[in-house]
Amino acid sequence: MPKPLVSIVIPAYNAEKYLEQTIQSVLDQTYSNWELIVVDADSEDDTARVAKTFVARDKRIFYFLRERDGIASGRNAGIEKARGKYIAFLDADNIFLPKKLELQVDYLESHHECGVCYSKILHFYDGKPDIFYENKNEKPFNGEDLLRECLRRNFINVLSVLVRKSVFDAHGAFKQGWQACDEQYVWVNLAYHRVVFSYLDEVVGFLRLHRTSDS
Image 1: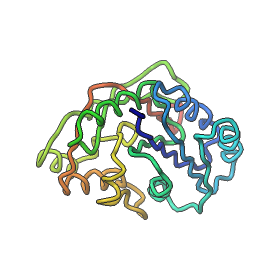
Image 2: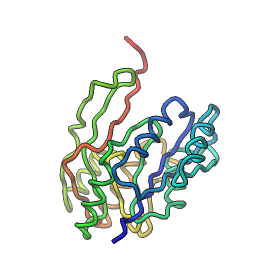
Image 3: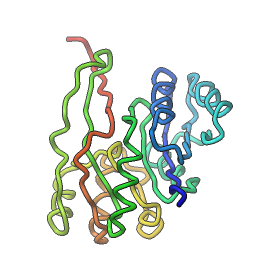
């Protein structure tokens, strides 16, 4: 039985410093049936060159240039291009752990009632790649408790999720034009429409934190 296709969306802007490592974390996945969609928001650095280098090497990787209109718009553009049964999101400075896709695809394939699988991530400060901080906000919620918690705070990081594309097709995706809370909006919207969320107790990615100063 063929493995379902997973579409991974990377919205990128001036990401040349980290994009190679980010894309390499996709290439290192134990699950191989994926497509990677890099959506470049008209970067002013060498983001395009880095992305196109990988496009030339691997037919599963695609690059699209679009106007600069926010990360939510970039994610939505990637969803529109996606051909996969499932959608994952990877910001251009973050990292997937090697079994991220395998673990979450296996879960969703065996839990057909579930529309969104979310998991643990670890935080690390740029320049200190060996020191990690657990995101303690991620925990299981269901039904009305899930909607209430999504309204109260954003406890699901987009790096941690795998979502059925049919869920976005039915209920919409990220709120364009918002400078903040676009992730929280999408989880509230899906919870309101009674999409089933399931928590998989595995670490699936590293989220890079940037210090504003060394003091």
